[in-house]
Length: 385
Ligand SMILES: [Zn+2]
Image 1: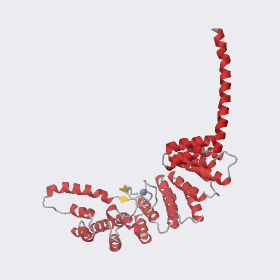
Image 2 (image 1 turned 45 degrees about the horizontal axis):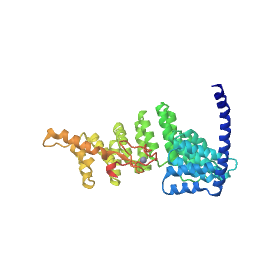
Image 3 (image 1 turned 180 degrees about the vertical axis):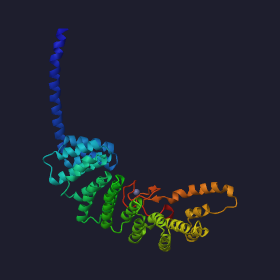
C-alpha cells in the first residue's frame, strides 16, 4: 500500500510537467501554422457573409487566439458580440484592445467609441457617459455628443442636456432652441411639483425667450397662471400663443375657452376661435366655439348646428357623435345604448399619434414616450390627420 502511494505522489508532478511541455510544443506549432495561413479568419468571414453568426464567432475566436495582434479582427468580433446582445463579451474585446500599447491613435479612438456603444446598448448609462466624454476632440466627437444628449434626456438631467445642446449648436449641428425650451419647461414642471412657483415662472419666461415660436412655454405658463388664480393673465398669454404658434391652436383652444368663460371674455374668445376655424377647421376649435356659444346664450340649440356645418365639409364621426348626443331621438329609450356604441367607436379617433413611430395616446405629448422624439405629435387628433 505504502509503495503504491509514493509512486502516485511522484508520478503526478512528472505527468504534469510532461503535459505542460507537450502543450507548449503544440501551441508553438499552431502559431507557426497560423502565421502562414490565417485560415480561421477567412472561415469566419465566410460564415459572416452567409449570415451564420454563431459559426463566425467560433472561427473568429480561434483566429484571435492564434494571432492576438490583429486589431481589425478584434473590432469585427467586438461588433459581432454587440449586435448579438452579448455586451459583456463585446466590452471585454474592446477593453482588451484599449489596453494594448501598440495600438495606433486612430484605432484607440475607434475602440473607445466601440466601448461607449457597448455600454449604451447594454443600458449602463454611467459607464457610457464616461466612455463618451473621452471622445471629445476625436473624429467621433459629434456622434458622442448626440449620444450624450440622448443619455442626459433619458436620465432627465436637463441642465446637462442643455449644456450639451448648446455645444452642439455652436458646432453648427442645427438649431436646438426648441429642445432647449423643452428642457426649461421640464425644469419648470419639476419646480411646480415642488411648489416653487416663482422659480417655475422664471424658467418658463426664459423658455419663451429661447424659442419664441414654440407653443409649449406659453401654454405651460398659462396653466401655471390659471392655477395661481391669475386667469386674465393666463388668457392673455394664450392669445399671444395663438399668434406666435398657429399650428398648435387646437391644443390651446380648450384652455382658452375655460379662461374666457372664467373671466367673462366669451365674445372676444368666440371671435378669435371663429377666425381660427375659418383658417383651419379642427375639432378642438369647434368644441371651443360650441362651449362659448352655450356659455353666452345658455344651452342654445344653434350651438350644435356648428357640428352639422362641420360635417358638411369634413365627414367626421367625432362631430357626428357630438351632434347626436344633444339630439332628441324618436326612440328615446335606445339613446344611451346608441350613444355608448358611438362613443366607443369614436375613442380611438380622438387620440394623438406620433408622426415618427405611430405611438397613439389619449393625451398630447411633447416628447414621444415610444420613440423619445421631441415635437413628433401633431396638434390634431387621429381623425383629422
Ligand atoms: Zn414616437
